[in-house]
Image 1: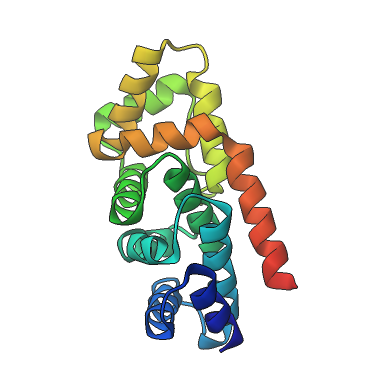
Image 2: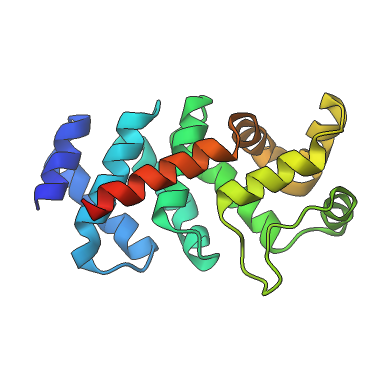
Length: 193
């Protein structure tokens, strides 16, 4: 309860909405109810450290949390991505849709996307077939596209992630892997305190 109260007061939302957002996030990530403080802390941190709010993050979670959970992308990574997207003015359901579409395309790339990924030397998965952390994925994308012109980089990202998700993944690349990694580290520290 204290975590939920802190989350509600951090964003000046009522306790019922804060509870609904936390409960939905807990279920979507297959977490235990005992993790409500962790969820509340991560969401509150994402809202306070970025240009987002808890209601918008909750809305985004509805779209991407099941995909994140299936690909073993934890709550902290997902919240970090939402914060970075919000800082690029991609918020709420739009942020959730962008991440869901892009991650789904990585999980089952079209033939044209696979061809572009191979030409860039880019893979979002490790040798065991597990998705790498989001910050590492963004770093790999930056490295693979660093010698491309702006036009070719945008075309490559559109082919890999689709038109709908292109803007979000370009924004994540612009902010860089350290932004995502740094937020994730802060969130993990907050959860341990």
